[in-house]
Amino acid sequence: MIVIRLQKKNKFENFFYINVIYKKNSVFGKIIKRIGFYNSNINYGKSFFVNYNLLFYYIKKGAKLSKRVFEIIKI
Image (tube, rainbow, N blue to C red; front, side):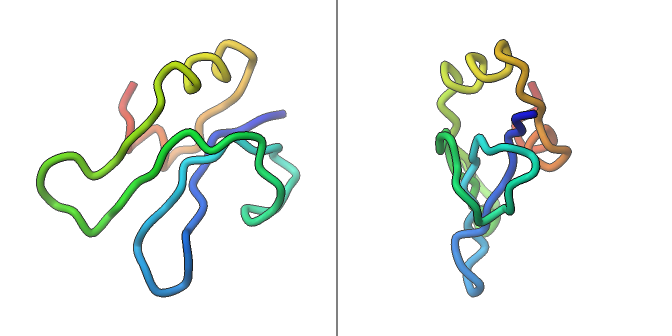
């Protein structure tokens, strides 16, 4: 099964990548595609970017969104 979930950039920043990855792989394992990012430090404006064409493509193929990604995007 394929999931769309967050991966933290590093230990010290609150910056996350939105990745398409196999469910059984580690969060830091091999990813299929990076489709966006989320910055939790920004409280104004746009704090995330998602390539919606890729997002909907992988959802049509059967990918599931994680709870946190779903809350960020609110499709």
